[in-house]
Image (tube, rainbow, N blue to C red; front, side, top):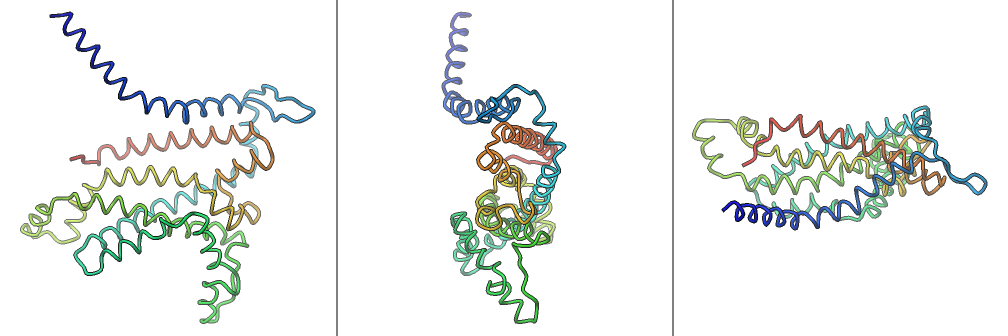
Length: 297
């Protein structure tokens, strides 16, 4: 009997490892090993034709923390994430609530909202380049009708980052709307009918029933939005290239620039390790902060 139980436990353990193996192999190959490689490489100096790479410990990190450009780029990314994440989520939820209501033409409305997401990143950036072009762009053409002076939206430090933020919100809100729309359609209509019988207003129904039931989707969207906030590089290539004077430069673009324009791979590795550490820490805080407010059905 004991031998039979032990055999069954081994069989179940093997079955579990077989299910886990594909994901474990993929994560090890494309996530864990590159992370360890980047961490190890960040401890070495830049290799040149005259000076081979040497182990320098934490000097790359010390240099980064003393570099004013690092703090400027980190601040840019904080502003970018702090604006794009909440604004995209609020707009996505509003669009999903509207597109989920009983109205004529809601299929067209859903397609219209989702269209920016289907556009390739480069095409979307080129589209907004036409909007932002000084004098002849769409925005200046409209504001010019009211006597406003032309603005070089992408060419001055005060507006360049905000112009990028607007493009990101426009593109990502429709993508997040799909998740909220799918989650709204899983809420049983009985809850709505019960709320009406109890005399609850629309706002009370939204606040007390809909939003708590959407918390798992909100957590998923927040994690994805946070990751996307450090993944932007395509729009910067087309619109600003991080300028003017680093005003719109974000972390991933700076990592690419450091690695492939300045050929300083160890410094780029140190930047990558810092970004991964911050992302992991924020994800843990998000899970712990929202865990008590999430209701899984």
